[in-house]
Image (cartoon, rainbow, N blue to C red):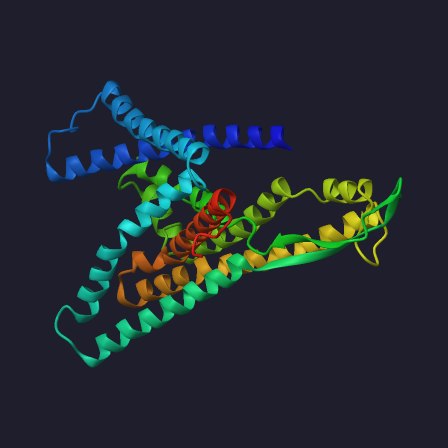
Length: 335
């Protein structure tokens, strides 16, 4: 219920700040190694105070973003943190487009580079269509309410449905999975150029196949975890039974719970496969490219999750605007 969601949000908030502290420490070590390599004096002889000032600055910035996101959620439209991430991704589109142009057509217009650019545009349009289709897809469980007579009036008898979205978790499983799988690389940052740190970076770098395998497994796990905390089949079945509703052909009570759970598991698996295709395929292509040519396409590796965030936030903001316009003016946003 509501109290459970509040506790989950509280735990998520504290866990995000803890991860920010760990990643801030990793960034500090990276900056220190860079200063030593380049002969800079900024943090060449660091102290404990220097460490805490820099790391706590990173952590405070994360806490400020979390607070700002919650404030936008409360006072604005849609999820505030998602809108901030959306703005960050959209702001990188011009530089990414210039990078693609410079890579394939920078040396001059040629047939091979032109084919690659056209193929990227076609794939981008197809991917956007694919993401919109799955983001809006849902499984509707039919519900029939029994007729009942109260005094001289008859109530019930109407048919409705329980909508279950295929990608109910949206981009959250990808965010959680990427946060967890990046912890070893963050820890390796403390080791600098030591052997164990180099081994972790080679074995669990974003271009390695073990990293991709663990990442995809975590996406499936977090997809099921998210649907478990956001949708309770027992509560839905009890509400149907109390209001005289039932799924046609399914007895009320435990059979209804089992039926909804079975559909929920299948839909969640389909949504997890969608996230795997969207986020995993670009990473696999990036890893194969890296193994062949010796360099990766970081923009391609994280394009799937970025595309899902952009499309999801855009659709959610559009729905919020539509609801607000209908509520105030009795007409839609684009009417």
